[in-house]
Amino acid sequence: MSEQEPRSRCFLVYAVAPEGMSARDANELLNEYIGQSGRGLIVSHDHFIGKPHGGFAVFEVGSDDEEARLADPGPLDGWELTSRPLTFSLTATGFVAQADFTLRNYGGTSLADLEESEKPRKRFWWQKPQHRGD
Image 1 (tube, helix red, strand yellow):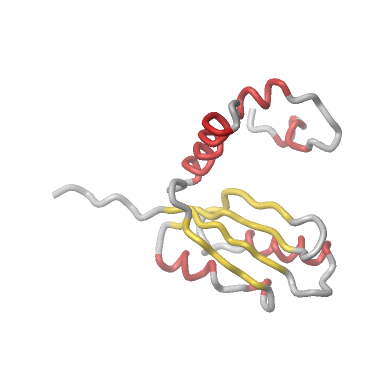
Image 2: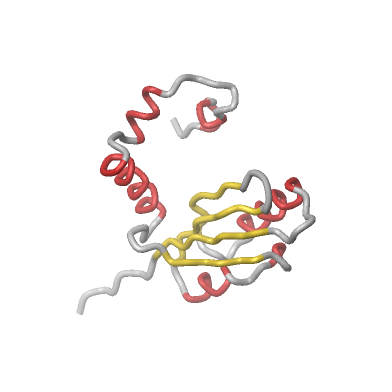
């Protein structure tokens, strides 16, 4: 009998802060939410500019318990939270591969080509050595 593959899938969580909350508070609370354990592996996140405040997060989820915890608002009590499973992003590496696939097949480029051609800018925090995985 073959060993069953572990369950794994990435979920996108879309989080909208209550009206009247400052961007700073919304950013801090979203960061707290993604930093709490039990929701799976946090793969990516970002914050919204303008109103409504909030952001999104992508988690690699490996169990029913982790999936259920996505809906537990924790520090985001009172927020509008929606989580949806992603079709092709079965793991964290699958999420990154899907981004590169999309760039290559629909954008006519690749992540590697974009990195190579991108001009340095102060605002581009990902270009700084302390943020690179090199």
